[in-house]
Amino acid sequence: MENTTQKAENSLPALIRKVLGSPHSEQGIKAQIIQLASQNLHVPEVLTALVEVLPLTKDKETKDRLVFFMSGLNTSRFTDLNALSDALLELFKTEKDRNIRTSLLTRLRDGLHQDQRLAAFFISLSADGSLSEQERIVVQDAISTLPAVSEEVALAALLKNVNSPAVLQLQAVELAEQCIVWTEKIVEGLKPYLDVKNDRGIRFRILSRLSEAKLLNIEYAPVLIGILRTDNDAYARDKALTALGKIKPWNADIITQLFWSAAQDGDEVVRQNALK
Picture 1: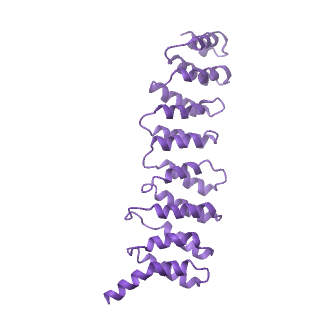
Picture 2 (picture 1 turned 90 degrees about the vertical axis):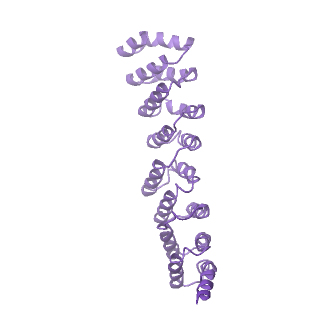
Picture 3 (picture 1 turned 30 degrees about the horizontal axis):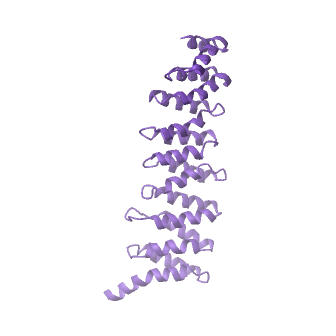
């Protein structure tokens, strides 16, 4: 009896590949195979077989059932989910159904703690303007709950969202803030976010962090001078002025700008602060 059970278990992966991978199998049989697989995940190769047939599944009913099953799969006991992630990523690239796409994203989001490669995928997807509202919610939730943010991940987010809407730019900056130390590469990646066309709240957030960490150097002078010359917001100019004053040592451009702001800025507070 034990040998019979073992043989049945060993044949299950092959059965999954044969039935679910065939366009000619009946829906009822496919449903039974998925149910059988869900009860035998302890059997070697069962999960692998399901992953292999997922991209091959063409009929919507079976695909929905498979995606639903995998979306609720407790993968905490599996040490390596790379194959599953790869299959879901490939399926997502070609899938058009919004509900299935959202389910795939949810499954991938839940695997972030086991597959760090997925961080780059979600960051890249965050700038995709074609996402539905539900898809975007899952993507943003995934990024906001990243288990750890490396310099590489933060840089990827900053580079990807330079020209994105303010909400995505802010998300990229928040990721960078999770890095304990802002290295030269991070500081360089933040420079484009200080452009006057960007949201002032984001600019102030960056300037404050740079100032507190004493990371403002002479390379930031042109950016800050640009704000002082072109920004219509007096508060923004005052913030830029404070940051400019903390750059050491001053060069001729900084001194010239301080004199210009003291004499010609349209706001009295800015003029007074420039004199100080």
